[in-house]
Amino acid sequence: METSPTSDAGAGAPFAHRHLLGTETLSRGDIEQILDLADGYVDQNRQTDKKNGLLRGRTLINLFFENSTRTRTSFELAGKRLGGDVINMSVSTSSIKKGETLIDTAVTLNAMHPDVLVVRHGDSGAVQLLAEKVNCAVINAGDGSHEHPTQALLDALTIRRRKGRIEGLNVAICGDVSHSRVARSNIHLLNTMGARVRVVAPPTLLPAHIDRLGVDVHHNLAEGLVDCDIVMMLRLQTERMAGSFVPSMREYFYFHGLDYDKLRAAKPDALIMHPGPMNRGVEIDSEVADDIDRSAIHEQVEMGVAVRMACLELLARDQNAPWTRNQS
Ligand code: NCD
Image (cartoon, rainbow, N blue to C red; front, side, top):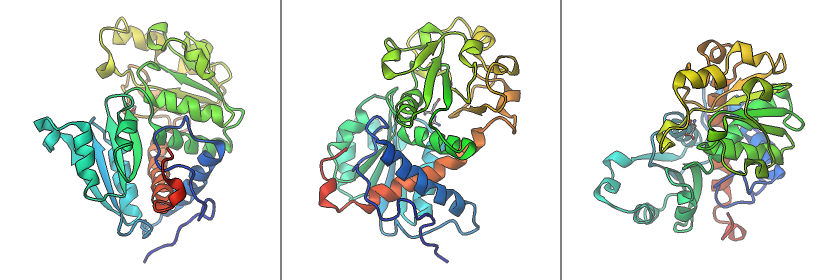
């Protein structure tokens, strides 16, 4: 049996963007529209029959130039639960290995008339470039250390459902901020939604002028967590590091890893989050990560599918509307 859209919120209302490339360009209204629609999909995904037919006849291509477990699977499930056809392009078996450029690959795929391209790429700005060359909607599933909008949206949905609001919450984003697209997308989104954001990291893992993004800066984890509602830990992204940014993993954990001792500074009901994949014993202690009363890490994964369904629905829905042309 097919179910109809499960949420009234955002139902039918046009979405103001043709692509989803980052959170920097999303308004509060855009974000609320996605989250309200996603709330309905959380319920749908908990039913035995998880499918509707909103994307029937539409094609989604997942084009991942970097490895991924949860994001790629999550987009695949999201597309299938909306009744669309989903193709996963694996870069290791594609013509990219034969030297085809990003743009040639995109233009080739575009000629097959996909409706949505979901793209992850190691270079900041690559997804935006690709979006300018194709006719379909493009979702950025992570470009270098620039943006990862659906991660920030799923984090926002997790926070809103657990805390009932985002506005006015103290959110600490901790760890390897320098290399993190998750941090950037979260900073933009949380600021737009009226949260108070701080980043907590050693100076070597903070980009220059980070304070210009509207965040407070701390270098000591216990100090940075004082009075926090949300503790968002980031993976130490060694694959993006040219050279050494931390003395050793052991020392990093000792000073900057989240354990119960440092967590005491946060509010007693502070929620612990991590985008995954986790480096246990590096940025987060296993016991804290697995604490079912405090950690929302598995819930974040669940919210990911719902948020991506909402994004796909909104972008696919208005695809033929002339007013959406040439907007990002
Ligand atoms: C993040 C990413 O790829 O940017 N992971 C994810 O999408 N869940 C964060 C990370 O890799 O550390």
